[in-house]
Length: 136
Image 1: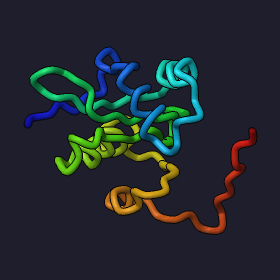
Image 2: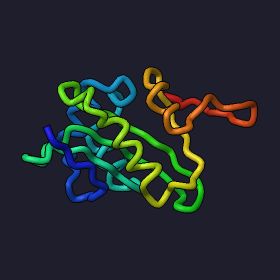
Image 3: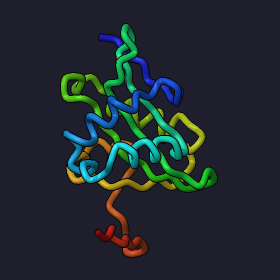
C-alpha cells in the first residue's frame, strides 16, 4: 500500500484523530472531543499519514512550539492495521527533521515508543530538566 505524509492541515480528519485518541491512546482518553479539536486548531504544526488512494487518515502527529527554538511533539500514532510500514518514522521525520523546526530542541512524553524516538536523537533528560505533572 502507498501512503502520503503531509503537513497540510486541511487534510486532517478530526473524527479519525478523535476515534483513536478516545479509544486506543493510553495518553489521550481523558480529553473531550472539544478539547482535541481545540488542540488541533491551536497546534503549531500537524502531520498526517494517509492512504494514497483514499486519503483516509491512518497516522497523525501534533506539535506545539514557540516557533523559534522549542517544540513539543504530541499525539503521535499510527492505526494498528497500518503499522510495520515505517509510518511512525515518517511522521516523526516530517515533523522534526523536514520542517521549520529542524534545529529546535524537541521534547515529548512516551511510555512505550522509546526505540522510535531514539532514532531521532531523543534521550532521557539530564538533571537540568524538570516536569510538573498535570493535576486533576
